[in-house]
Amino acid sequence: MLKVAIVILLLATLVSLFSGLFFLVKDEGRSSRLVNALTVRVTLTALTIGLIAWGFYSGQLGSQVSW
Image (cartoon, rainbow, N blue to C red; front, side, top):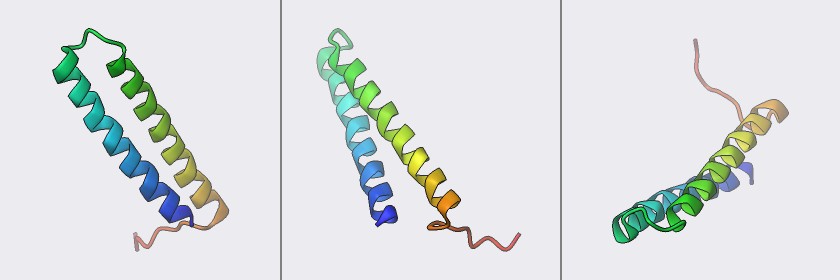
C-alpha cells in the first residue's frame, strides 16, 4: 500500500510539473497559477520524501543493494 501511495504522489508531481509549464507558456508568468502549481509540486515532493523516509524507518521499504 505504501508503494502505491508513493507512485500516486510521483504521478501527481508530474501532473503538477506539466501544469506549471502550461501556465508558464499560456500566461507568460503573469498570473499566480504558476506559483500555485509550484507550491503544490513542492508539497507533493515533501510528502513523497516523507513517505519514503517513513517506509525505510518502519521497514516496509528496503534496499537490495549488495554494497
